[in-house]
Length: 101
Image (tube, rainbow, N blue to C red; front, side, top):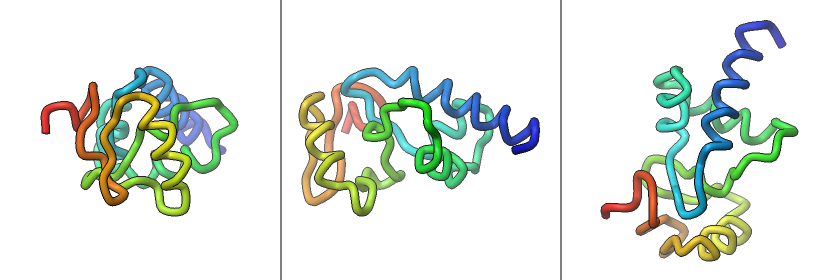
């Protein structure tokens, strides 16, 4: 990985590790907060490949859809944080993008 790639990954991971219990956000929001707007796919790729412990379950797509193939685990973890899930989508969360729906 080149220096730019390592810097991007570090900044995205820095955002991810600040997500608090009950806070649900999107890949795009994480990219924006890290300083890389329109790089939501990069966030997804980092979540798939990083060895750093990050709260992956607190990140969903812009429509609130859970991670395909991991819905059961993600639902369990989010329910423990008082997030409301219906039909594979976040409907309401105590904090973050989905808190005022």
